[in-house]
Image (cartoon, helix red, strand yellow):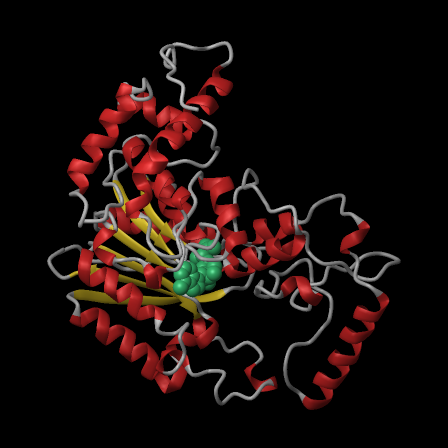
Length: 420
Ligand SMILES: C[S@@+](CC[C@H](N)C(=O)[O-])C[C@H]1O[C@@H](n2cnc3c(N)ncnc32)[C@H](O)[C@@H]1O
């Protein structure tokens, strides 16, 4: 049932309860109105959250143009909230929507962005921390969506292939860490390389790049930021990367890229390809920031007390030892030794939780252990306030799929200063 809250802005004693009540009321109030705007494979809650966040940050609403213009829609939604005592000023509405979150955008954002293939919002954080507000996010993995909502207060839209690009709100920057699996080099030598490394020529995952282009061509953001595996550059003898470059340039953008190793900002050797495309009419000169200095030691992010459930079994440890032996004999593949705590770790991958072979922490008198999800979040440079999933498997997968936040933050800082 809806209830109006006339003293909504003046409460102080039981502030959080009142805010939660008011936020629930606003969600309930908007839900039926969002229904004609919800794309296939997305949930109603995603549109409700988008509307609330957009109103709070002074941004455009996600809107089906067959029903209304975004401006008319916003006007009627704000009027409705006012009628129910849920909106007085944007400042107060911002407090209502964001006060329960530790990671939130600034009240008066300098720029707006959209977060495609959002995962748990690592890329988002880097841009948000530079004064940006997210106006649309898309991620179809249910567990990642939950982590995203827990931390950023919004449920992402689902499958991007089902979203009409014309309904996406206006934004200055498009962010997309599009799936890297079709281009990844990991383990290719051990598998049948043919058919596993085929990129977007014949792989549905790979064609997602063209969904990114669909949005770019419709919305023409000032800047496009893409992140992918290092191997993107070399994949299919450079043809995949050439297609990406040519396609973006043809759409009216200057293309810049850099392969960056994150180990000078976090104790993880994660080498990734970062791409920044700047719309041709923008005269600013963009160049990537430098990432130089000493590699960080893994020991700096380790937790002091770690539960025995992270210690690997005898069977698993023996498997690692046998594989190391085989690999040394063949001179190929990963080696399964324990990590050197004075050096950065190897790259965290989505399947890390299966056997931990990329980074095992030595322990006195016991088998080595896996990194904890908290340590994984630190290896990716997430703040300690980030809410981590309770279940280990999705936690490892989500951090393994994510990005090094401080690397993104540094690049976002140059974009904000030099381009926007
Ligand atoms: C490499 S991860 C990106 C992670 C993200 N940059 C982060 O910081 O957490 C790619 C993500 O794209 C999502 N994804 C793949 N196909 C999708 C689709 N068609 N629609 C929406 N999300 C998709 C995957 O579930 C995965 O979480």
